[in-house]
Picture 1 (cartoon, helix red, strand yellow):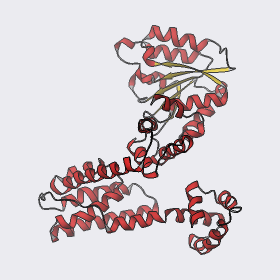
Picture 2 (picture 1 turned 45 degrees about the vertical axis):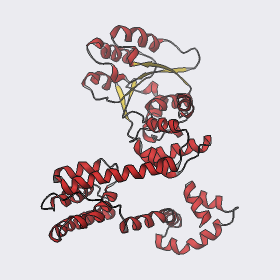
Picture 3 (picture 1 turned 120 degrees about the vertical axis):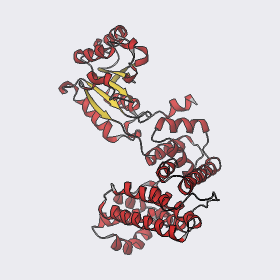
Picture 4 (picture 1 turned 90 degrees about the vertical axis):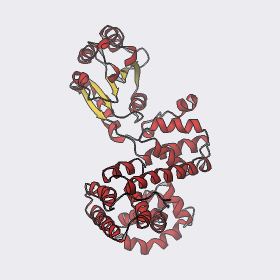
Length: 393
């Protein structure tokens, strides 16, 4: 597995889905001589590309990287000896060098007393850039490092970005896969690209049969537990139960709408549907005004509100997967690529989406000609999956 991980490690900044963080780091290294702060502190959850982006940028900008792990320099004397020596020597193999101190938040405890202060002093004196990484950069003991460093945050990587990276690796290395299986890996990694790569490496071959069924079973089991809490437990426990499903509130609503009528009396249904109706009003406001703070109200209404509508605990029953509403959602997803293409057409033609929809048959006819489709893709800046849909339309 380790050989796969080494082989798949991102080597270019384009392969790391952290564009804003990498832009800041590139500007820091590119103008280091003019920087008032002589170090960078890259902080964020594990597996978000902190260390990889340092190596990728160093390769791009011609820096030699001298890496020191905080577990190897646990006290003042070791930091002065190892880090201090590396920080002041010139590179023998490149015109410039940078010092990378990985997991600097590992310098902790009584045995490390004086280590952070020693490192802070070296930062003010070294002629070379020092880049540190940390999962928890706002620990009190790191205050002296924060004040001398440019802070660059690395956020959790979105599921869609992780899925795109996994898909690229599968295509490049000829690994059999399907989109549903890759989405499962990406979603369960919780924003940790390294974890997703480790899962991919351990599976070696990602197949829908192996993961798709597993995902469906896990999802149904999670929702059964959440619905049991909603219908039998305290209202205050409902939201936390649905949070554990790792699905979006839109899907929570589908499961609740499917199963609530069989559990509640007429009076209880009226109160529950009042909550669902108010949630739908807030959902409409989000779509019209993009006021995403209303999402918190939606979550409380469809979980705590629906649970509070019952007069007492309900008997445990077999809960069903969503039917009618899920079919509507599937149909919507079916046309999502078409709608995305229409949106890009409208922007390119300076017209409404409705007008673009009327003109779409002409675009589809043009796309049938292999010589012309590359020009259409370039003009509309279509993604690969959108171009594939257009070619098959």
